[in-house]
Length: 496
Image (cartoon, rainbow, N blue to C red; front, top):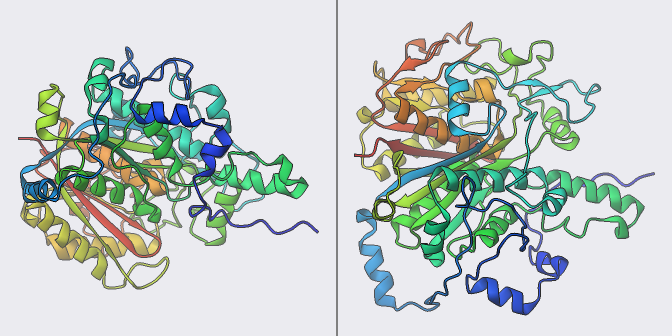
């Protein structure tokens, strides 16, 4: 009898295997460490690099001096300047069921388009759930080298593509890329699930023989490798790691990236999240949790936050990445500033693996701490992109917490992007941060679709209706919560 399939808990495996598998020589590693350029046909072989015409930029050919052991006095000086270092958003990149461009993505949201449909990637006819926010059309052409893309898990393909698109969106040309101080540029893009497909395929190969296993199965399954490979491609030597806090992953990464800039450790950060869980083991796992909607006959109406008839969340996939930049650094290169990142917070419910705290203590504390960190009052908040996943307990407990925090503010507008995209797990906060920033830019907030019969305990006067609404956003709050009781809140505002 075949051995049981092991769960894909591979985050802790040693990523050092990548160097051995790739056979990178010491001389080559030293050359890359110095920041030498990798041209077309180099390690990643991408035709379009960040800054080349429309897509992505070339590695710097400039040598640089990196202080490996800075003087204590320098560090202390930077700490005293934390509050003076403002963080702004200068770029956005997305790969979603509703499009792979920030404007296309947000226009679809404003029009109330649903990205939920029947799953086509594999035969799921025997599953009780057969729908998801599945990406139907996606190509890595021009973003990831074909040979590398073939070996990668989709979460890494989405991550690298969204990251490079964010750089392009930020106007990081080849000339600007060459002038960046690589030791002060970092990548912090996380994943809730990591390379599930790569790991699952490796287990199936192991049933035959270890000799059949993909030599990249270990490094390409770990959640950190997407950020690492993107940094290698760009030559960025600043903060580089991933955070995995289930569905709160993106917000954790965005806030930590901003803090690296605030503390003077970096000037420019790529941050967000990526996940590709729509595979048999991913779908089966959440079905076993009894967490998913089974509205298979009407996919576009399956995700319905705050509606009485909701029956679980709808899985989605994709990636959302921001370019965060220190204000003076952005000004110096003439960047377009989309919004200002004000601050945020994270807390833990310390209550249950999957259920929210019944009194919402962790969420309330998280929001209050986020307001304090951002230097704003609750009256300043007039738009909230809620976590609201379309689950029975989660939707209500978050709304109760919002009511306790903000009261009956008639100016407050609340919506859930997941009503149209489904739940992108670790990538959810990334694309929802983009939605919040786009609301600031456009003056429009997207509708809540499928809210036909609201819960009686939900004040519908705070919720955006079935059509987009005008909103002059003063401060936007974006919430993301995850299994394990992880709570996160981040705030954006128009740049002034």
